[in-house]
Image 1 (cartoon, rainbow, N blue to C red):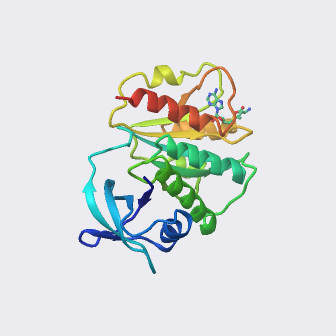
Image 2: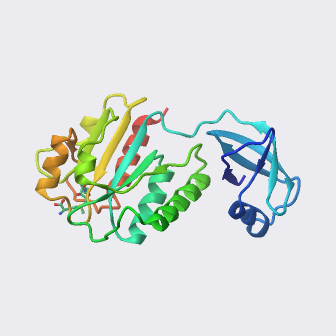
Image 3: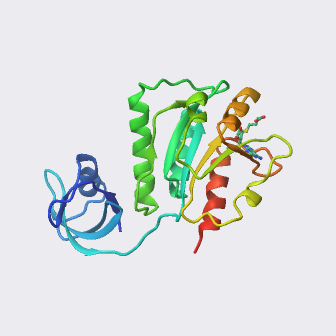
Length: 238
Ligand code: SAM
């Protein structure tokens, strides 16, 4: 069943936005009485379509007990990469259960961006919303504002702070995350194609980030977050 995220509930009813209404009526060609899943405040409701135009309205028939979210939370700090790679990382990390994504600007980032680029963030939000619907998540990951290394080094509020690095003699992720991660709030930083500078890594280590290795192969920047999310997902499996 097709899933949609809707923020507000009016009594027993949801009104979908323009884009989702278009998808239901023009792409899916659904009719009155057909069922859709609506997730609102992390709860999943089976709803029946009652109105098609101008905006689709749907009434709750049943509320499910499902929870497809991880038992821990992972914030991915992803160094800026080219558009297609960033889109891929956002989509796949969302499918794998990421909670939050923070774009990071580094010395070796090939893509430049400033904090006022609302359009790009809006596009990314659309990608994670669609990936959340497709993968049947109960929440859409939040995309935070772009940060610098200096801002990131001062970030607080996390139980586990990891910096992915290809430096030698670094503890690997298997050893670091082998204990229970249930309920943990984790933040993981991945570098750009050219890696971090030594100075950037030192700044993050001073800020309380622990270096972590993802194994002896050097992974592409778009592979690293997917590997991390897969490891977390494996440990988190019930
Ligand atoms: N030559 C670059 C360097 O010296 O860092 C390689 C960068 S790698 C293509 C991009 C990013 O992915 C790295 O900055 C790191 O965050 C992450 N990464 C890739 N392979 C990794 C590994 N085996 N262990 C830990 N992090 C890794």
